Length: 321
Image 1 (cartoon, one colour):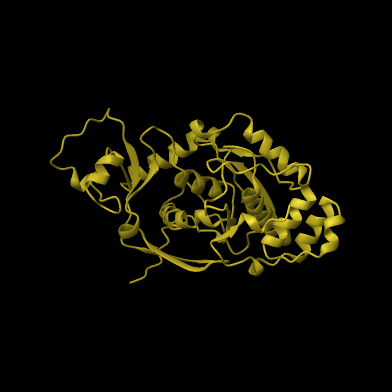
Image 2 (cartoon, rainbow, N blue to C red):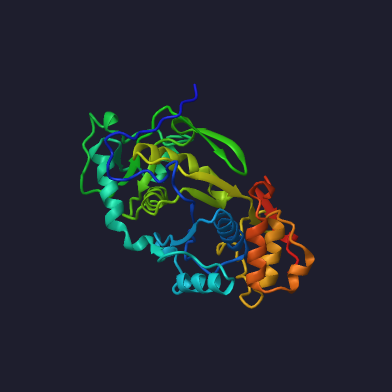
C-alpha cells in the first residue's frame, strides 16, 4: 500500500517552503572539499538556468558541515569560479557551519516529540547483526531491559514508519522508496557530534524558501529521506530534478576523491558550451565565439528541462575541451 503523508499540524518551527503563490527559488549548494570540477559546473549551470528561465531567484549555499573533509580556501575559490563563469547569485551566501544553533533547535524538537532517539551502535555492531538496513536496535521500545550510559557518544536517528515515499522527479520520472525496509531509521546527527546532511539540507531549504531543487543524480537516493523529514516537520517538499552525473573512465563520479581536475577559469565560454551540450540543450556552433554573458543569455532563453538526458550518468569522455 502506497501512502502519501504530510504532517503539517502543530509543528510551527518551520514554515512550508512552497505554496500556490510562491515564486521560484532555486539553489546551488556545493561542499568546499576542493575546486569546482566539470561535474559541479553541470549542476550549477542546470540549477542557474532553470531558475533564471522561470524568472526566479538562484541562491548559493556552502555545505561546510564536515570540517575534516574541507579544503582551506575552497569556499572562496568556488565563489570566485562562479563569478568568472557569470553565474551570479541572489542575496548573501549561506554557510552551514554558522547554523548549528538552528539545527540543534530542530533536532531537539524531534527528540521532544519522540520522533528521534539516541543510537549507540557502531558500524561494526550493525554489520555483525547482518541487517541490510538499520534494525532499530536502539529504539526506545527496544531499550526496556538495557542500561545505557547517557555520557557515551551516540548518534541521533529519525524513527521511520511504514510509509512509502512517492515523488515525481522532473527528469528521472516517478520514484518511490519504503524507508523502513530499504533504509531504516536514519542518522540526523552523527556520533562525532556533526549534524548530518539530511537534517541540515532540509532545514536550510525550508528557511531559505527553496521550492525547486536541480542537482546531481547521486543525491536522488537521499531524496526520500529528505521528503520524509520534511513531512515530519510540516514542510511541503520542493520539486526535485536530478541531472545525470559526470563519471570518469572507471565509472566513478567526478570528485576530489577520484582526482577530478578543476575547471579552467580562463575558458568559461568553452566550458559553458560543453555543459549546455551535455545538458541536452543543443547550443548552436556560433556560440563558441561569443562572450560568457551571451552564452548564458542564450541558455536562459532556450532552456528546456525536459531535454536534459534521462540518464544516471554521462561519460567524461564526451567532453571536447
